[in-house]
Amino acid sequence: MTRDDLVLMPTHLRFAGRRFPCSVGRSGVTRDKHEGDGATPRGIHRIIGMLYRPDRLARPAAWATPIRPGDLWSDDPADAAYNQLAHAPHPHSHERLRRPDPLYDLVLITDWNAPPATPGRGSAIFLHQWRKPHHPTEGCVAFRRDHLTWIAARLSPGSRLIVA
Image: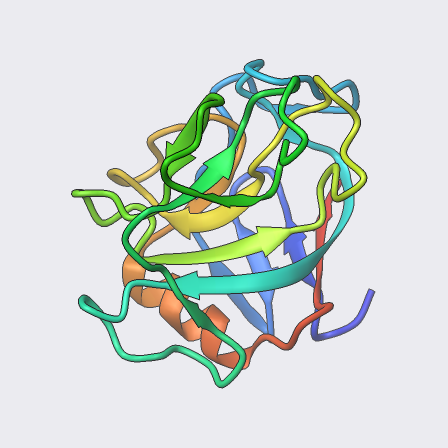
């Protein structure tokens, strides 16, 4: 492990010499991840993208990409775009990235089940803002907004999220 790794511990995430309280999936951490199980997958996951809402916050890092109206994330194992960015209109099951709440104002995308995605192994393992302190997610890792923004400003593409 290096100082640039994001290391998920049972009670917090460690990064750049600091500790950040966070939330994980409602079903905890698992080695056997599948779509809809509510678990955070164990392993080493690279950060491969950063998305942000330009109407709600300043660009958090030079490599961040704006979330546009109609941006979606496919969570349908039968979709050729499964576990990838998609755009409306989209006939398959998906999650809207431009949400009315602030959860996805800033999103770090991991390479969990990255293309080519294995159908049913799970999609959209993001690092994003939490709903409320320590409220569980659907499998993502969630943080306070100011902590997530601090982390995002110091990450580089390919940084690793280590879920032990």
